[in-house]
Amino acid sequence: MPSPPTAWSEPRTAIVTGAGRGIGLAIVDSPTKEPFVGCVDLAGSDVTATEINASGGRALSLAAEVTNRAAVDDAVAALRAAAGPVTILVSNAGIAPFTPFAAVSPDDLKFAFAVNVYSVFACCQVVLPDMVSTGWGRIINIASSSAQTGSAMQTVYSATKGAVISFTRSLAREVGHAGITVNAVPPSFIDTPSLRAAENEGHFGPGVEKLLRSMPVPRVGAPEDIAAACAYLARDDAGFVTGQILSVNGGRVMG
Image (cartoon, rainbow, N blue to C red; front, side, top):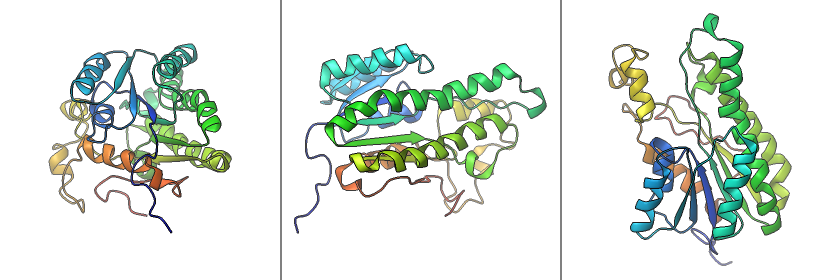
């Protein structure tokens, strides 16, 4: 039996939301640059795309508000026109507010679900026809370990990411017959601007590094840790992996 391909057997086109910084930036800027990447962000992705192109990759900056379905449609259409059918999607854009539950307003709830859940739904629905027609697709949704453990002051955030996990498993069952895999990656504490902003606001007590000393892997994760998991799930040889929650969290959640 021939060995399976280790990356992609043909050119691929990927779209990554929230690509201007943090985890999204690491995903599109990973060493594996074989797919043509569409970087979706309201700010910052111009620089990202320029740097990727300068280093030998192929990228296109796409400014879009991920809660706006028409904007998502336009972004995917622009990428499709430039590079062909979109067969890899990484839904990374999200917000992680800290708010006492009693202070959460209906508007807070609606906005968090719009950014963290509806955007995932919209992006998946827009790219699925490309994947179905191609007979190959990889959908990777960035969730959160807070959905698995719970997180005080983040009831809404944890609920949205729990919804992403359930959505991932259900969609995986629905589209697997078409050669499409759907998986989720829930990070824990990753060294991003958002994490450091929350730390500076006092949400992590004595500080993130001290908080994680009791973890099996006692360090803050790097955005590249998440990028590596996404790169694996996007490959040809991950075609038998679907509906999975690939936790990249230093042991915060096991099993």
